[in-house]
Image (cartoon, rainbow, N blue to C red; front, side):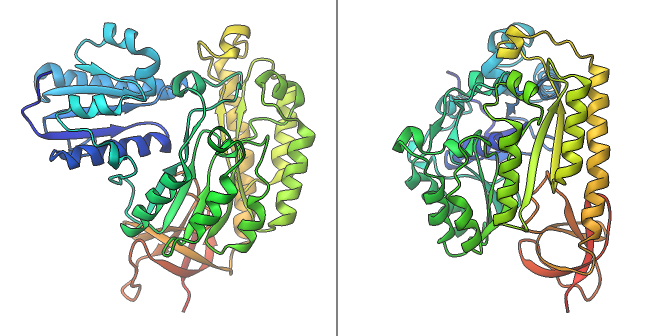
Length: 437
């Protein structure tokens, strides 16, 4: 295999935070090999470009293909020396991509780290797999505790792309977390396709409570946040820990996807409306200030207008702190793609998305108004023009709302530090405040 002459490598990441972690592991391997690395798609400088793609739903696939085509043109012109495509889209459609975009030098899947490093001109270091070069601000990081998924949701292609659920050993998670904290990270987001199953394959039982307790004892780790907990088989032992430990955020990301039993059954989710409502009631009783984030999928095959209205009513009643909604994407190879007809027009799907988001916007504004005059502990992420931008423990970066603090001569603020902020006014999805004197 010819070694690239230019030692510069740009890694461009698309998709979710799990892809972010994969890219950060790759970047560290490349840096250890003595290569010059970058991760900004706007400032690549010749050499090798590696695109870490997403292949989950139609919009994500289109974004990935557009990025590949942009750099394929650069490869054709000789602006870059080598173009490598990796990740979910490449895993799923490698042969089609090879045929349709011949300008790409190499395509790799989601488990080909060693081959990618060596193709880029580096040396693979298996002993450094818990080491990462962060692409996030230096004070927060994502930590992936497992790979793949064993669930059989009708609409989801992840098990076909990423494979079965494989937990990372507890020791590796703790090692990685300690390395991150020693490098200045103060907030860690635990991520997985399904946090609730963590440990069952390795240890025969749920291990998330144990991992969470050990992580909470790491000095300097101020916030621990949980993402992507599946409603079924929820590890209830984490709730006493969340109440006891000051550095475990009162925040849970649980994608319910729908509330109508007929739709949940067609989605093959494995839980019912009654179970969802009971779960929410219990969580809020145990942790009254819990910020509950969820995701819904509208336009799934079989979703009637009655089902959708039931979902709207559920959103109105439940007053979720954070909410995302997506239109159903008919994916080949999934259970739905094989057994169902994509019968709801795209226009109708988007109409339903818009209705949910308009409703959630109203709910978010009302909930934000209740925060005026209250003081919150805020972690500052960055400065944008005339505002410092931060978050409370109830908000995850990039997906949730932010706290904006006007920049002033007497306002001495540093990113990565915590401050007490009094909320003075609000917007639909943002809080505006001043430092507490």
